[in-house]
Amino acid sequence: MDTIDRQLVLATQGGLPLVARPYARLAEQLGLSEADVMLRLQGLLDRGLIRRIGVVPNHYAIGWTANGMTVWNVPDDKVDELGGRVGALPFVTHCYRRPRALPAWPYNLFAMVHGSSREECSAKADDIRRLLGEDCLGNDVLYSTRILKKTGLRIGG
Amino acid sequence: MRELDAVDRRIIDTMQGDFPICERPYAVVAGQLGIDEDELISRLDGLLADKVLTRFGPMFQIERMGGAFVLAALAVPEARYETVTELVNALPQVAHNYRREHALNMWFVLATENQAGIAEAIARIEADTGLPVFAFPKEREYFVEMKLEARL
Image (cartoon, each protein chain N blue to C red):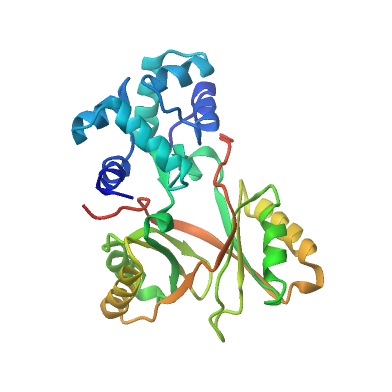
């Protein structure tokens, strides 16, 4: 990522301009041409530095009022295979391997599930437990009760 | 909370990715939605103002830019919860923060431009709050696609 890419990130991390020609507006701000801005953004997408361009809804506002971070203790030698299978479930939105923090935290697999109710999240956690079978050595579901901050990432200027 | 109509829901459901890169991208999307360009722009503006949308724009993969992302947690005594929330949220490196029901009752994501920034942010939070930070860096990503259709 060079200086111009970085400037583009800084200029768009708060959002895209809501004007008919948003890329022309960015170009004006950055002293580039509209075509340059479009090429650069496409390049960042192609290289995976931008995952996607679109809207991020507030889950609560669109009806997904329950969110559960399901956490699982599975054998280390199986975590990658199991993580791949849990991540492939249609209702899992994020799935990661993370380190345990023993003794307080024995879980090494995290999968986020969402629903309109805790019952819906809990049913989804049950599906994950069935998939893991005897490889589930322990689990928990941590429900969120309040959003304390949500700004998305910001890099410094 | 704002009531969503059918057009709002279609905007939310179809615009969670694939926003086009062309001279008149809103006109293209509006055409797909069967509304006009001005209406799409003003509805996006309203949905953002009403906080139905938290963001509209590119979603960056910060690790591929040399940056770092870490999920971290604190076990905060209830009596100090509000104070600790203010201290943690004051750091610009804290991208989001959720209260969760568990002994570890505050979960936040640190996003920094480089790996050293994570250690600095953790040290700062530990010094400010007097509480140990539990850090859970991502060791492997199996799936990430945060797309949810509008239900309301």
